[in-house]
Image 1 (cartoon, rainbow, N blue to C red):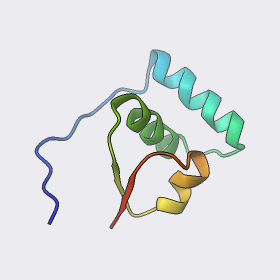
Image 2: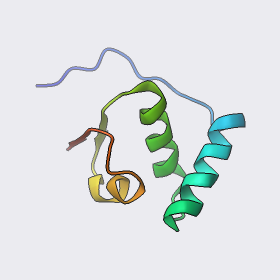
Image 3: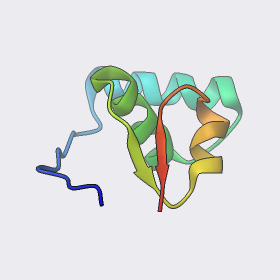
Image 4: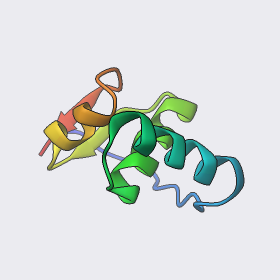
Length: 68
């Protein structure tokens, strides 16, 4: 079983908003939330626990994904 010790809430503002917009434009997708998750994973180097791994892989195939 995987245990998580904390959850970070990262505001979608400033440089994150610009990075999300750029990622959506590059991938021709529209899901702001998924794009923000990918950007946050890139910056922090975290794996992403997700029920939608294919959606996230469409945005970026590199982050480590943990499907649930």
